[in-house]
Image (tube, rainbow, N blue to C red; front, side, top):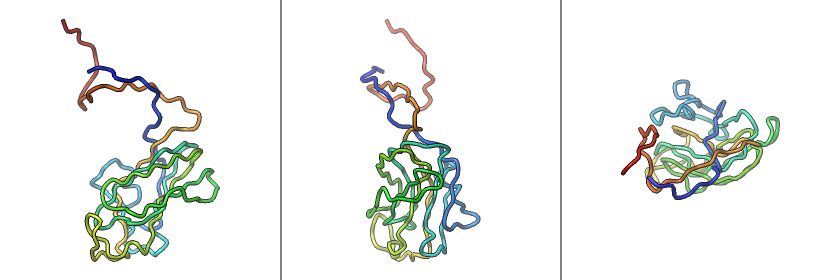
Length: 183
């Protein structure tokens, strides 16, 4: 492996310390979205029209660069907004509107400073007639959302990020480091 660039890191996966949802099934709670397991999920099944949202709280003020959500089809969110609070007691304000949501990983660039909480809020009217791969289907809105994971990226306010070495080829996942001299 050869080093091709050395630069400061700009973001990292930010710990989410708590989650809550507008609606959830007891056996498919909102906490499943932060368990790092794509096999578990949160469901907002039978939620009212204003209850298809997930709130993620951070432990301190964070400069957010992007968020990622993993939805399972056909119960994805075709349209939703991403909102933030910049103080624990503050009001929600919309920082992104997604109008082309589908199943799988959805990534939204944000670049918002001093964030304490992030919320994904699905547009209820868009939940009618969802299908697979962005096509129309017959999934009713009351069936709710299925979200497997949520991730937030950025850096804590005032944090000094580490230096990153960019290599010409990626390391294997089981790479343990070290040095070998080759003659």
